[in-house]
Length: 226
Image 1 (cartoon, rainbow, N blue to C red):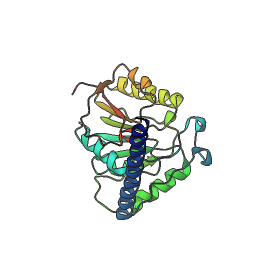
Image 2: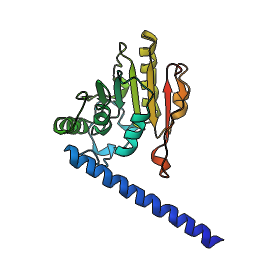
Image 3: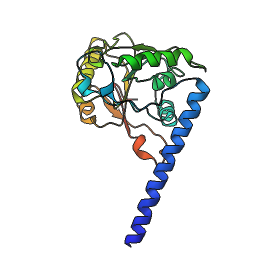
C-alpha cells in the first residue's frame, strides 16, 4: 500500500512539473510571437517603488498566458468596460485584456516594472482594441474612475493592508456612482477581505479546469446579479 501511495505521489509531482514546463514553453512562444518580455520572476525587495508600501508588496510572478486567457474569455461582461489590473507588473495581463476591452489601465508601484511594461506595450505585435496605459503609482493611492463601468483584476498583487485600502477606494468610487463593477481575484489568499465588501456578490464563473488546479484558483464578484 505504501509503495502505491508513493507511486501516486511521484506521478502527481511528475505531471505537475511537466505541466509547469509546458506552461512556460507556451508563455515563451507567446512572448516570441508578440515581441515582449513578461516572464521574469523578480523580488520586490530588489525594486525601487513609489509610496510607502514596499513591505506589503508581492514578488513579480506572472500568471500563465493560457490560464489568463481562459479566465478573461469566461468573464460574463459586456466588453465595453474599463479594465484595471492592480499590480500590473511587466504588462502581460494588461496586453491580454487590451485584446478584449476598449480601455485598459495598469497600476504598478515599481518604477522599473512600469518602464519595462511600457516598452512591452510599445513593442507588442498583434491586434489590440487599445494600448494599455500604465500608472506608476501605489495602488493604495490610485484614484479609481467613478464615471466608468469597471472590470478589476487582482492576481495576488499585495498584502492585506494595501488590499483593504484599495477595496475602500473602490467602495467610495461605487458609492459616488453605483454602477456595474466586476472583480476577478486570482490566487485569492485574502478573499475574506473581498467577502466583507457588502455591495460585491460572488458569482459562479464556469470554466474548465485542468489538473494543474493551483494556478487557476479564483473568485469572481459583481456589483449586481447577472
